[in-house]
Length: 163
Image 1 (tube, rainbow, N blue to C red):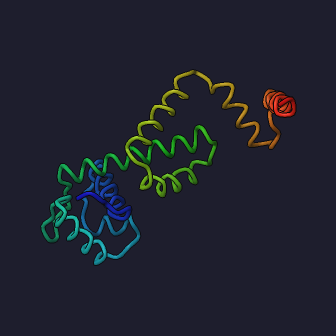
Image 2 (image 1 turned 90 degrees about the vertical axis):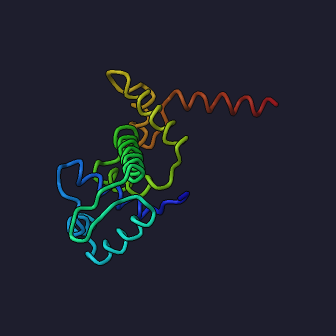
């Protein structure tokens, strides 16, 4: 299976979260967490069984296969990285960062995820935010370009008029 829909990724992520929290991943529990009907969950569980992503016996727990678990963990990691980037680097409020990470997690590939992870790790490696990041946050608050940027702009304008 090459393509996993965002909806299917959400199901796998929810099932993994339930199991990781020591709760049974029943059709009812999945439906509650997703805010949808049990018949809708039952239909999707049937598809996931067909794709060999989960195992399930009627009225029992839904269990992830190794493939299903791997996909769920990758989605959860993308979500975590995106939420951290939005919250800690762009300064997006936590609730908004989490909701938007939920949307974005389905849209980025492995290379972008690796680069995002490296960037978040790089920025977070120091005890305090880098100076450029603090200037960015100030710019977000004031909409005023920092002085160093104004000087760079002036120099570029001078170069363009000299040529």
